[in-house]
Length: 327
Image (cartoon, rainbow, N blue to C red; front, side, top):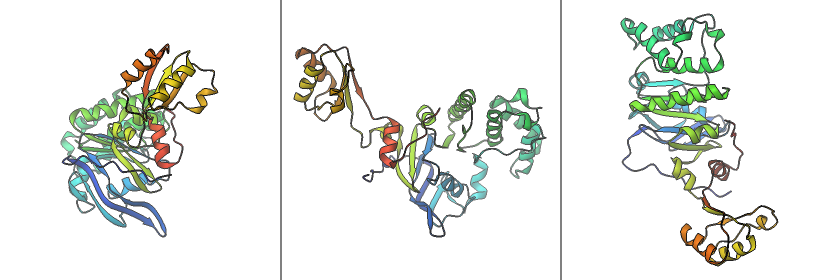
């Protein structure tokens, strides 16, 4: 596999997270290898990669839970871990799943966590707990013990904990992991709502379908390295080649016309009984000119589409690995 080109952050963009050469080694093993991460403020940034690629280790370094071996990191404009006391009150985090006291209610768990936060105010605690529960749709279950919560409810309670105080940045590690489709949709809607007030959301995930529906930007980790980052559209386009797909009963004529335009039809199409011809758009002809040439050549065009490279194809191209696409 060829080494992919890293998509740079747009110059002048204000960043919520920025790293330079961030590295973490455990003995002889390099878990995170000199990554330069750039997360724009206000983005929903999908941090992608298979298990073991270094995502959670990176998050732990960003939050000051793990000391870096080398490199630098800035969160909300401040160096980390030197600025932990100033930065962490502005950051909400859900890392490796929520952990609650099972025999306390959802409300009691939140009050317990809030009491442990030295930056919280006792006078407004009741109101803030109630607001956080309402925001994640758990007001009706506030008095229910946590052990009776479904997995989706526990995830939402974890998000409520992250929202007890005003946050500029939310860091969520696999927030939909293990959820059923309904729970996944609920958490997805919550994450979208967070960005309405300008909150930046950094989401670590291995679920490709979630990233495509949720994120504005992506970064891909593979073997401890950051192999690509940028907007979702930039990520799809980088290194990608558009393809034409023509649906017609006149397969051979269509192949001949396309070849004249510099578009070689896929060999597998010749052995297929389907009425579709596909090929890379290696020529300079725009889509409308391709359709006009097909019609002029006597091809009965029943459908025409220019297809971009899918997110899954791009991921496999970058990492050489499969990807979990289960919603």
